[in-house]
Structures are given as C-alpha cells and as structure tokens.
Image (cartoon, rainbow, N blue to C red; front, side, top):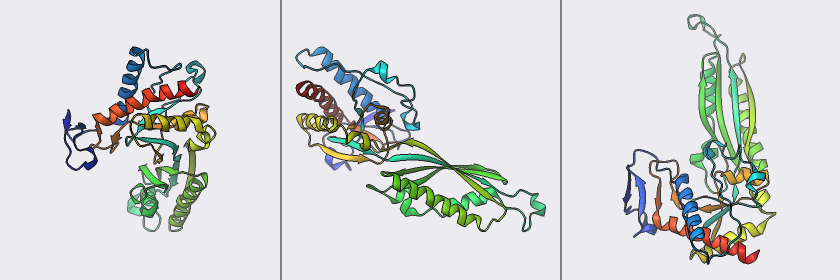
Length: 298
C-alpha cells in the first residue's frame, strides 16, 4: 500500500508531501520517480509550444539494478549524441562520477570424505569460505565506508563439503583501488588456505562498469548545462559522485556521455525508501529547463 505521510524526522522536508510504503516493502522510487518525472516533462514540452528545444529522445531501460539495463540498446537507432539519467537522490544534485565496479567469483575446492572417517583428513569447503568472509576487514566493507572509499561486499555464498563459491562485488573510484581490493581478497584466501593444505581456490574477475567521469571530463558542456538547468529551476546545484552506478556508466563508455540528475528519492533499496512530491516537481522543472538551455547554447 502506498500512502502519503509527514515524516517528522525529515527536518529539511517539513511541509512536503512525502510518499512512502507502509514499511513492509520497497517503494520503488528508484527509479519509478525518474520515470514519472521524464514523462511529465515530456508532456509539458509537447503541450507548450513556447518552450523552444531541439530533438529529444526518451530511452527507458529495464534491469539496471543487475547491470543489464543497456544490453539491448541500439545507439544508432536512438540517434542521440549525449544523454542524462534521472536516477539521483537529493534535489539539486548532478553526478558525473560513479564507482568502477567488478564482480569476483571465488571458487574453493575442499577435501571430501565420509564424516565418520574425517579425523585430520576432511577440509570442508563451506568452512573455508566462511573463514575467508570472516576475515574481511570492516573498514573495507559497505557498512564501514563512505564518501570516496571503495569496498568489498560478499553477496552470495553457496556450496557443499567439497566445493564452495563466494560471490563479491568490488567497488572503487579508481582502477588502482579495484586492483588493491582484488589482491586483498586473494591474500586473505591464501592465508586461510594455509591451514587447509589439501584445498585450493580460483578467483575470476568480471568487469561490470567503469567510472563515467573518464568520459564526461571530455565533454564538460554536458554537465555544465545540467548545472545551469538546476539553477534555473530554483535550486542550488551540487556536483557529486555516486557510491554506486547508473545505466549512464555503461552508456558513457558505449559512446553516449551520460551524467546523472536527481530524481528526489532517498534510502533506496530499503523499506524506508521515500520521495517527496516537491522534489519530483523540481526534477520536472530541471528537465524542462535543460531542454531550454541546450536550445539556447546550440
């Protein structure tokens, strides 16, 4: 059930209409809010002929949260030179930097034997995997980092006595930071396996997305125009970095430079997620002003 509530703890939102769930499920403002804002802005631009703008293409993609949002995008058919995702948080923010992201699969091979005859012979792969995870330092975990700190995050453990798998996501703003975190995990694995001489591990690294700032720094006007649009919408522009990624990360490296503009949601991926109507309206005004800015500066 969706309801509109006043949240007294949100001091900077006093008087705003805050949209939440009943607290038992996700709201999905990430990114239903962005979808609603894009469609509303498009309606305004279609109805108001006095707003001058160039050709605008709308692109809606599924599966962004699992990294497949742009797998099927045909950029030639889309015919755009740059883009913006409406997928950010606080009103007024525009983000031109994301984490660089890898997946890491650690496959552990243990020593299997009947438990009745296992004395000094069994090496349980599940216990090896558990020991590796237990040694991950808190200061390199999502719950122990903030700002521009990267992290290592185990997201799945599966296995049996003879074989186990640990899946990680590895995040950092620099390639050097990613390399260091991969090395840390493998060092921990080797250290743990020193107590399990019959066991072994294999690490497989998979690139997921890269920091879009590498591309956007080559096209400063794209972010500059977004900053001006936010200012014209009556907000104070705040440039920042995302402790995560958007489809804009991959689109940028596919040849479509794509920073991220606020949608107004907060506490994403949590039953406590919320968005305010006023911030959504500000996002709509920003999109409309962005169309004006590009027309004026073309």
